[in-house]
Each structure stands twice: as C-alpha cells, then as structure tokens.
Amino acid sequence: MDVRELTFKGSNEVQLYACGKCGRVHSPGIFACRSDLAHAEAQRFAGECCKPKVCVCGVELPVNAGYTACEKCREKNRVQKAQNIAPDDYNGSVYSDSNSGDWGEGYFSELSIVKEHCHGHDEIEPAYVFTCHEQPLRLDAENILENATSDMHEDAHEEVVDADEVHKFVKQWNSKQTCRSFYPNWTQVIILDKARFDALLNADRSEAA
Image 1 (cartoon, rainbow, N blue to C red):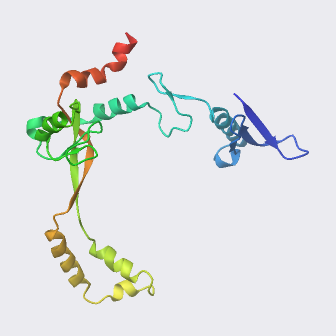
Image 2 (cartoon, helix red, strand yellow; image 1 turned 180 degrees about the vertical axis):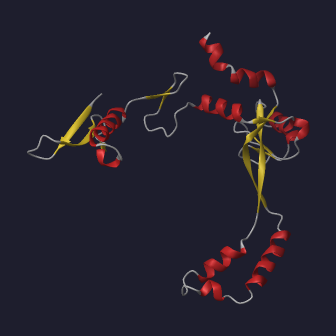
C-alpha cells in the first residue's frame, strides 16, 4: 500500500493522505466520524486509489472503472434479475445489445422480425432480447405555465388567467401525437435460444470446473 502522509511544514501531524502512484489526495475531513476513524478511512482510500479492481469472476477491471463487475458478469446479473416472458405472451418492440435491429441501435420493431433481420445482415441471432417500453411525445401544461412565469414576479403563476384553457388544449394536443420513443425494459427478458442462454448463466461454473 503506497500512501504518502501530508503534513504542514514544521509539523508532524498528518493532515492528508495521497496515493503514491497518481498523487490523488484524500482528506479525513470528508468522513463524519471520530478523528482516528476518519484518518483510517482516508488512508485506506489513498491506498486503494490505484489498486486494480477485480470482478468476482477474477477478471481485472480498469482502475477508474465506475463498476465492480466485468461486462460478462454485468450481462449475467442483468438477465438473472429479469422476468422471463414467453415469446407468445409479448407483442411489441424488443432490444438486443448484440445486434443492429431493423430500427437501428439494437431495436427491433417486433419479435418476429429478429431472425429475418439477422439472417439478412449476417448477424448471429441473439440468445435473448429485452422487451421495450414506449415513451409517447407529451407536453406538460403545468410546466409550460411555470416556465412562462419563472422570470416574472413571485406570484405571477397564481395570476394566470384561464390556465384551465391551457391544460385543456395541451391534453387535446397530446392525444393527437403519434410520435413514440422506445427504451429497453431491463426487467423483462425473452429467451430465444435456451441452450445459449443457459450457457451464459452457467459460464463461470463450467470455467471453474
């Protein structure tokens, strides 16, 4: 553990702790605890600053990684937590982060087009896909009124005349909109190839064996 203790000139009392590799400084002052515990924590952070991070599977992670699991383990954890939806029980767009999709960026307009699209674009069919949830284009009447009066005097919002008319108009306008955006629903997964899907879940066991 390469930690440098920083003191004021002429004093032996440690004020800060620095990583001996990158020089990043860690202060005990940010910890809401007793002084001795705060110093211990700051020293620990300095010592672990540039220490290689390792996933539970043994894969070394980038030093500045903002995650604690490798890509394969993150994928495994995500699908393990997701609800398994039968293909026949779902009608809508789907997402795969390993394919292009007929909508692009991994999005497929519907489940039935996955195989056709992959074959036509020389892509391997995904072992699973996630369902999608849609976000329709919507305006918020209250936000519109608040933004319009935000730079006016304090009670301007309460003095708006016929605010109900704005709400009524926006509601009607929203109902006419057909624009939709779609986003992956990480809580629902559809298994397309059970053998490959099971292999993903059991990868660490087979490698350990």
